[in-house]
Image (cartoon, rainbow, N blue to C red):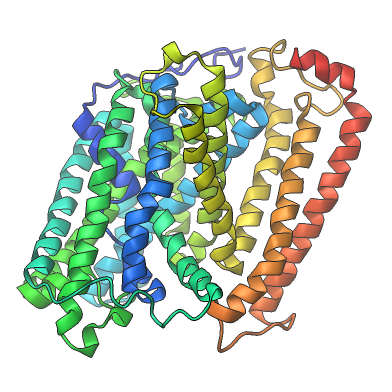
Length: 559
């Protein structure tokens, strides 16, 4: 039995190398993981209205971005481990739920990372005005291989490259803000919404149209935590996280506010309705080009590409550590723990993310993002729950950083974003809902297979993590499976009731179809089918739990 199969080696015995990385470098890495510019906000402006979009950009940091930044800082200060949020959830909720959080977020990053390759290619080839698919694939492949090589060289090199790219992006958006404020044209908060609000349902529709984008824009603060085990001083991560929040807020709010105002006096062609990410739409590059000349428009096109480079480079480092941590706990194929001897990097996981990105990079942006948001938000809920549990479990003296306000404040910080997260499941549309449900279900399916095949934590410590010999899973896993599928069934019922009304009123008001053979009808039928399957699986696992996991054994395992 070797070190890769015994399940007894920790991450540094496996060869991970420690790197000296300063606070400023981590700030830029977190900036890239969360923002790297304002790209995506353009779609909020016509959908929610300029005033409401700005209000959400100002409010969301305090109810979504900052709470997770605080939670990630607190947990990162007391548990700075390779694997980050996966380890936090595992400690708080156990092996099963830890795997779900680790799998959901890792897969979302693998998919999410492909988006940045797709966007970089889209920005470049819209500038050069060509649609040669072979050349486009060549550019995307080169991008993937260059940043794969940088990541194999280690976290320090990743940080150096990210520093340079992030400074360039921040300077460019600062320039847009300055240009916009110099050409101030009126109140950017008017109109508040695209059309006058006549009822409470109108507020729901307009807020729903923008909040999902805003949540995505303020997500990613936990991602740096997966690399904590490779830093000489992992406490730089919580420090940098708190410093990055205001930088990201300024990056989003100031250029957006200035750009909307500057275009107010420029005629109907520059109305807020024309903002967006599509070809010919207004955006931050339009502000620079219109007021400073065509050369600035070209410059900003390059900035857009550089921003995608910055995000992609850093997310390879973050996302690739997910499978390393799972494999280290015998919950994924063991080749993922192989580490490059020279650079001390888990090179197999780095290569794996590059291979997945290469396979997916020619798909459309809208196809790839369908599963992403649901998985990301689900893993966030797990981290919030874990933060409340670990606050009670871990001695106060072990925390290097602890948010003020006591347990009551922590509950507010965690419960408010959880409520927003649950709402977000329903307002992204039926395609996101259907794809997200499929993505969530992949977690328990893979756990069932990999736990039985690779052994999980029981391979490290069979006394601490006893296994039910009849199922090959941990004691109590049947109950946990029933809870997960029960929750999915409840969410599915909510989707079946809410989505038809929501999409008929807002998403597809003019061409809404409910026949089984329409695309929408098929999606609703698929959601109903998944809901029924989840409800049936919940009932089955409840029955199996009572049959093959006697209470005496479970009580003994708990003690």
